[in-house]
Image (cartoon, rainbow, N blue to C red; front, side, top):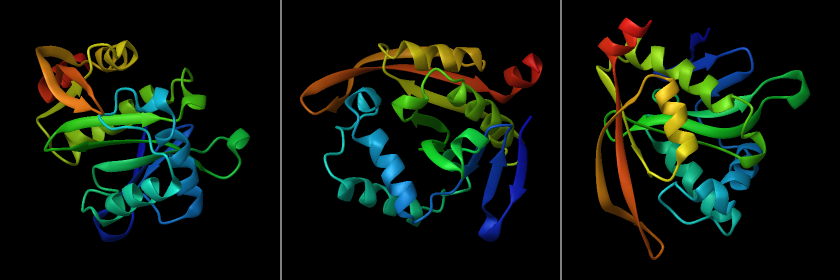
Length: 189
């Protein structure tokens, strides 16, 4: 079960047993933690951009998120809050952009712990309830089986496929389009 707390300027924080989903912050801790993910080729494999090669690239990305009206409203930094983590540490990001398209990533050392599923299960009720979205979409690389499985577990269904939709470096990538409709999510309930 997730708890939604309204903080300043229309922003929210969403808490679960292990996570705090919050807006980005201009801290060296966020910058360093996110650089760990952004510089990892395995994390970036399906992200639509090449890995960051310097902290400056991550700082620019973080600055863009900080300046966005979606920061802390529909776009969140995933922080791990368990006692083993010590003070909350940024482990990834989840959010909706381009209208209702969801995206997320985690630093590799946090893969396989259910963190992405927990974050996804926390934001879906918020997006359908408080944000009043009627659907959430996803554009997924068909080779990203983990992401596809995660989305299907949350109730997303495949709606289409298209070849060569975006280019990362010199490689063309395909798109698997998925969707979760509010009505279907409520019926699954």
